[in-house]
Amino acid sequence: MGMVVGIEIGAQVVRGVVLDPQLRRLARTAEVALSEPGTERAGLRAALAELRSRLRPGGAPVAVTADLGTIVSRVALPFDDPRRLAEVAAFQVEERLPFEVTGWATDHAVAQRDDAGTELIVFGARRRDVEELLEAMLDAGLYAQLVAPRAASLFGLAGREGAQAVVWVDGADASIVVAVDGRMAFARELPLAREEGTAEAIVREVRITLLTAGVAESECAIYVGGS
Image (cartoon, rainbow, N blue to C red; front, side):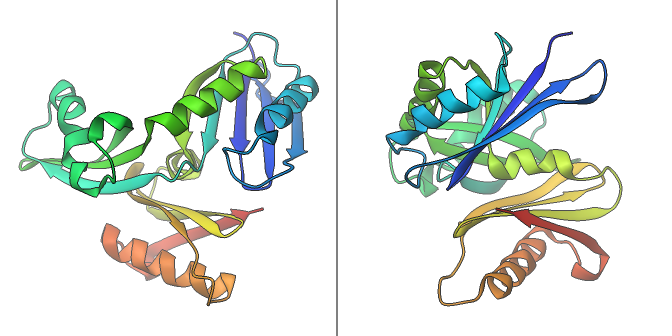
């Protein structure tokens, strides 16, 4: 089995890791500061190229996570067939998208299944933003096999038992995911209110997210990190 490469694009830095799955350890890590904030900055390609030179990933495919202004919605559908869910998920959030649904890339995770059907967490990002990110990766000699919203990628940090909330603060933005017994209950990508202190804003937004997910704060373990 070859190496596994992961890259995070933040507001101020790009970070990367190379994992050796056979030895189950980190082979290399690297971090490169960005010259300008935002994923559409001219310096992104240069930063990714520098990151690649430090990581030395070879031809390994890359999983990349970034905040692309992702819109997140929870929708209920009266069936559970995976093919049908994939076909209609994007159109369930069409009213929330500021442009035509065909101009957006969407994906989803199953939040809950029962006799009434399926509840989904649907993620949407502008297709143009995703394509520009992929182009920047290719220009830097990196092949992105997977692009994930930051909130979705945080789900992998949650445990498989009980209720947990994982929060990542990146500059003035935050990503929050709530997991219950190994399933994604809800997720959010949001700016933090500038008139509040960072800690106060995080507490408020986590409470809102838990309320939306139907999870009691007293029964939820909360993990916070960031840059």
